[in-house]
Image (cartoon, rainbow over all chains, first blue to last red):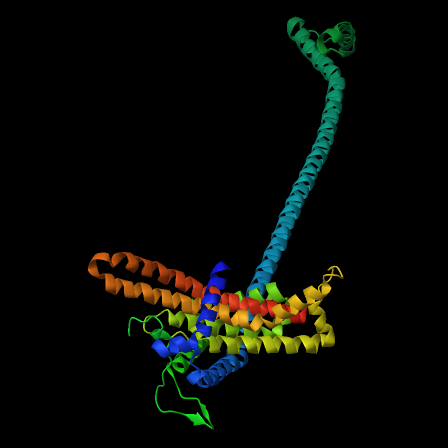
Length: 196
Length: 244
């Protein structure tokens, strides 16, 4: 501010002393009106052309360049954002699929295990039933054999004893008497031999 | 005569004398530097806007940064209504800046160191702003001279002061630029003259001053262009958005 006032005062001093300076050494060339009209003319011309060319040709171009870049950057950011979202949803989908398939696999495993266990149990049951039947059959057969065994033994005993008696004493003994004795003995000791 | 620091401001004819009627519109060294400055601006900004790449090169960056700088300056001081005047203020700022900067090159001529040039620019701005103000607000624009919240007794005085300050705008605007340019260049010339007259022994001190002054003057050259443009914006703001 002080500087401004200082130089303004210098300027106005020059202004008032113009004639004095002009007489001496030309004074301030700025105050010589010889080329004022020329300067005004050329200033108007050059500044006018500058203004027209800048405002009509160059500045709109710079402005559109800036806008274009801005919108392009915005577009790129939007595209990047979209792709990010897409990839996120894809990742989610993938996670879902993985989760689902894991669940499915678990279910399949569980199901098949249950099935196998059921199968095994069924087979075991039928086998047990079969075995039981076989055992029962065998037991029945054994029973039959057991029941028929004393009679056969008795018969054999009777035959052997009659043969023995024949060889020993040479006499024929009535089979019926022998069988009576054998029966009697087997009844007495049968429990001891056969466990029935 | 060469030692006279004012000779650098002399205007002389280049080429033949051109006359329209009684007016002498010969091509002078002042005209030459106006043409050079305008051409430099046009070339730089044309190169800077030629192709649009996402990653701008240096000259494109320069053009775009200048564009955003002036755009921001206008929107900060005069608001969004000043958008239509962007091209004018941009041209004005660039013209003054380039004229100032070309003046910093030794043996060149500083266009803006002439009162007539700055005064024509300032009066054009003054008349333009006044016309815009009257178009936008009609006679309501005169309310600019009546600030609100002033006691009634003081009002006559304030109105007179406001009118004087309004009318002195073109003078203050033009003299500020012209005086800064002239004073700086004169001072540099004076110190340069001292370097010669003091010779090899004592010339180092004024030489170092001269170097420092060159830096200062480059700063002033930019600052005065900026001040010129921003004051235009402020005047435009008064005309567009009547605050009083």
